[in-house]
Image (cartoon, rainbow, N blue to C red; front, side, top):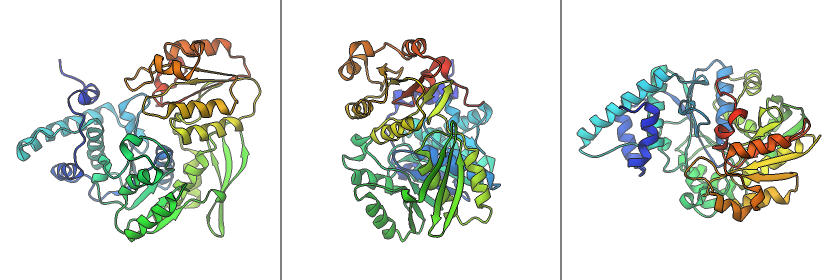
Length: 428
């Protein structure tokens, strides 16, 4: 029996786990007819906030009357979420057609080049996205890197009009390096000569490093100053804030979220949009785009009184804690934690405990081969705090929850789908 497109792509790691050189991917893009040709490509790298910045920027562009293509990862429910046209998840028909085309081209490429080339999971989806964007005749393409930047599959494209670097912190150190500067060097690999760079406010000399790298490329460099962001009001489901985007200009905006950290991501998207120098982008389209942005899994109330946040590293957890504290406390706070082995779990769990803002913290393994196992969770938590699976953990918390209590879920985006009855359909 033949595999479906999604089944085939999911099976790729079983027979191919090695990334290809960017030169090989560039050659394959040429073999595809250079689907990136003529597109205005915005490339986004960083540790935290990449997806959110991409979502805000896409919404701003769309509100400005621009046709957009958006490539992000990971997905929450369906693999098709990674590829969007005007923020609409591509249809199964479009997804399958792109899959068949890439599969056919792989076979032809191998014969011409006399090699055994086969894209990895991420490379395959990236290549599909590019042919989909070409066929859809989008004007702007926003590409989120998967891991790092310098060697990321998305960096096989050189024709960019803007590069964006979000907050850099410790994550994937086994691949990217043990220091912030080493990680920053990998992220800075997306820069190109004379292509403007906009960055979040960074730490420990990282901003100076990025500025110097941009200067080497002859690129304009802009950085978000967090002091330029002022929060005026935190409502139940929105944030009223202002952003000083030039030394003498301030704009007042509304975000449809309770996640305080999204103000910095929104500010980064605003600065990015303005750097495009597209006359269709105005303060009114920026405002309209931001207020309509939907990016699931970030301080999202997925069920009444149940809030999910995909924080999965130390900086993400710190931002998550800040947002939790900002929500008015009317009852108890409960937390469900689940994570993957590559993360600095001791530090993450330590942060969650030290703040002492949760009445009870419990944990469970994920249905994912990268998950922290029960024996590993037992090292981090007491026996009575560790559950065998997500459903039993959520059932336990739901039975304890009173009307005024809140349940928070964090540690990995993989938890989103596993939240069972609490999960909402991303198409609704």
